[in-house]
Image 1 (cartoon, helix red, strand yellow):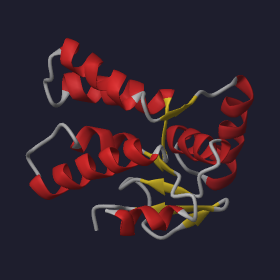
Image 2 (tube, rainbow, N blue to C red):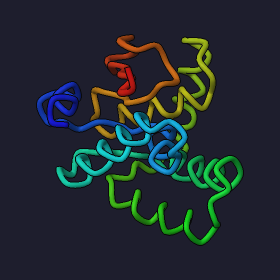
Image 3 (cartoon, rainbow, N blue to C red):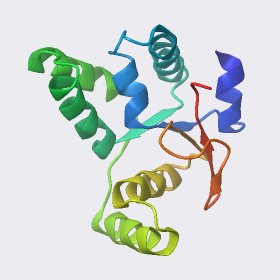
Image 4 (cartoon, rainbow, N blue to C red):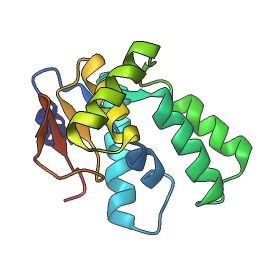
Length: 146
C-alpha cells in the first residue's frame, strides 16, 4: 500500500487514530479490516507510523468493551501497536489541546490527537473521525477507508 503511504508526505510518517487499530481487530467490515491491517503492517515495517498513549488506551477500552476481545489478547495487541512510534503527551500538550479545542471548536480528544500528530512531526492524520481532505493547523486529514 505504498501509494497510500505517500499521502503522509515525503517521509511517509503518519499518525494513526484509534479507529485504524480497532478495525484491524474487527472483521465485520472486511474491506476496512483488511485496509487497517495493511496500514499497520506497512507503517510498522517502514517505521513511519505514530500513535499516542491516548490511542493505545482508547483501543484497549473499545476492543474489550465493543469487540469483546479477551483482555489478555487486547493487552498483547497494545504491545504490538506500541512498536509504532508512541507520542507521549506532556502537561504542555494537554494545555495546548485545550487552547486548540477552544479555538477550533473540536472535541478535546480530537484536539489532543491533532496536537500529538503535530508534536510527532506528522503532516497526516489517518482517521475517519474528521473531514477527509481537511487541513487543520498544517495537518492533512486522510480517511484511508474511502
